[in-house]
Image (cartoon, rainbow, N blue to C red; front, side, top):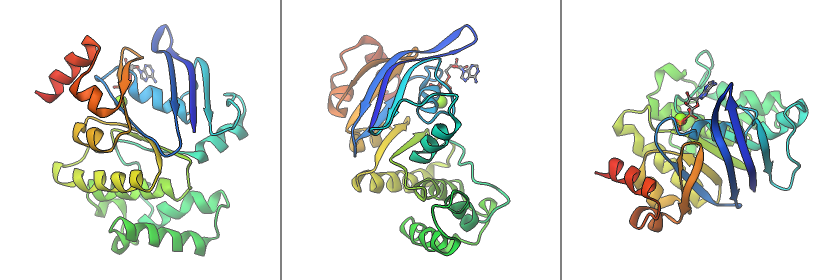
Length: 243
Ligand code: ADP
Ligand code: MG
């Protein structure tokens, strides 16, 4: 589903991603953990071309590597790879329903009626059908984030990226968002999730990637990473976050 080869990203003279290789298979859930500033956000932003890699390749599905100058290919990539950010990013001046229908209708994926039917069904699944005509400011952070997730799903992405989706939420709403993500994983959605929620990583991830200094230090099944990390840097990080 995703092939990343020798990915580098530099901001001026500051090299933030230093040669990352990663393969993600269909239906896999990969959780990325690591210290702040280690390049996790930059890395996943490179996966849907919110950032253009300095060098290296990102291939989605059996497509071709996307050239940063090819606007059509970039647009296609962004449709195939959904993203959910830390600060939900719903359009504040649009109702929940309008937020959900905007992209599918604009990109002619669905008629307005079809898009509305789909939106209602998806909102129903995450317990928010009754909020369809509310504005984002009338929702809690957790509710907004659940809308952001189903809004991304409305484009039927092949891959869904999450960048610390629960970090900005009040603690009591984190669980609802994680539950939606667990359901998605159980349904077979291919997901890459940057998070500090170690319980979620343990329970839901097929693979955990420890990222530090713009590189993958170690990756493996959650049981191995959490119980028997091999690298000293992974051990030190887990010690600091789990104790
Ligand atoms: P993380 O998500 O792991 O906290 P980031 O990917 O946000 O890390 O940042 C990694 C490094 O890249 C940081 O030192 C950050 O300051 C730098 N960085 C991120 N985005 C930019 C940018 N647009 N311009 C310059 N430096 C950036
Ligand atoms: Mg980040």
